[in-house]
Image (cartoon, rainbow, N blue to C red; front, side, top):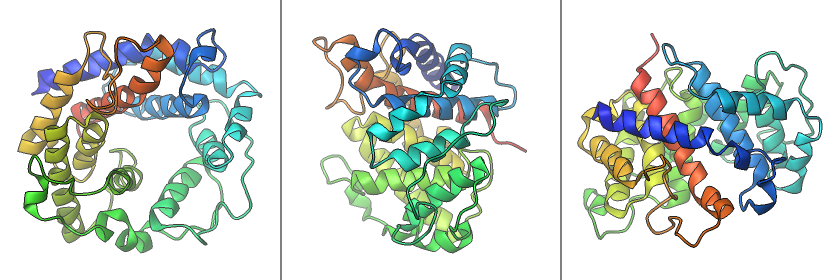
Length: 304
């Protein structure tokens, strides 16, 4: 199983390092890109940020780290955030939170009340608090302890066991499943800290995760499988030692292309031979990046 995880990590990291021209909004490949350019760069910065904190992990993303530093030094890079007004404030906050070491005083343009809890779900408040704390920005979001009971880790009811079997409907709709995984990411700082959950909450969340993993394996939903594997690790379980986790790792290993990419969010949405290079990147980069992030963190073990 470790060899399958090593295969996923090494191949995904190689593909990401070889695809930096598509992550770079100012490269010659940018005009053909079909993805949201600022979002892809911010996701790459998150991968670099998390990888740099892992003990005993060599710098496997030197080119990506250099690109992120170059972009963060460009005064016109944040202009890309405003192209997507519905996400601009979130992008500004993430940009400030993920600034590479040595780049200080990041500017921010946030919409009024963005840092206020009013009118936001518990999940949205957890996300804002995570990045605001990391950026050192004052905010009005309540402590995590008051948000957990309202969060997707608790609020989603446990599905019936048969709902995870092949041919049945998914245990959780995709938006709820992604909200669950991201909530765990933020509470556990992507595997860096204990998420601080009670035993009952942890058991409930792990039950949801494992049933969703079974569903993802049965339906080749690769992107969500990678996120759920990382969530299981953050919640204190070893996904390599659970049947659902082991099956999900093997599922991702089967999906991985010879070039190291995971060619889409799922088998149903995978890239095809008729896609241009930009179209292929738009379909493959997020799942490949999340797979690399999961594999690096899970294989590195827990911090002491």
